[in-house]
Picture (cartoon, rainbow, N blue to C red):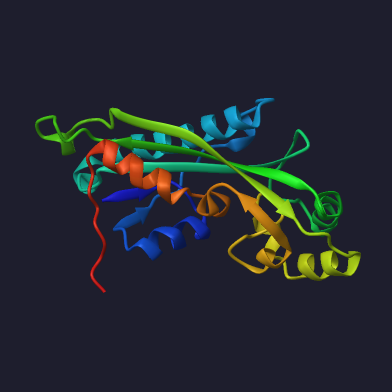
Length: 211
């Protein structure tokens, strides 16, 4: 079974759509401790830290968690003209960001880290998560030109308040996206092509749940 080390509802929805058997254990990593001028390096470090936190928790409670084969940690940040946009602190900040992003282009970076128990080892369910697969996937987002009224209407929905970059591609925010260049699901928070490849490398076949 896969563990998702994230409280993200969007990532949960992606895994549910696939029918992958998983559970959620939210990491307690303090993201404010991580400082890095390079956005890609920052999401990489955060994704690894989240996966490591949860894998350590599982090993401490091994009798109850021996069914878990892998832990998936992810972290997303939006880069706009060299600046990092996480979740906005209030409506005004969201409005100001959208004024800047209107008719412009930004990049959504998601760090992915899969820690897994190597099946080649004897009694692998009792061993550490020694396998590591990590990568940062980046997707360009080209925004439509928005009026001030459109920006205020969108922010009023509160959807931007829970998203890196102040938009949700899988929600109302899609209405204001002109185009994307790269992985669609990566913008939502988890690159499914990356996950498929990582699971194959790890030798893990979760299969699909029967309807």
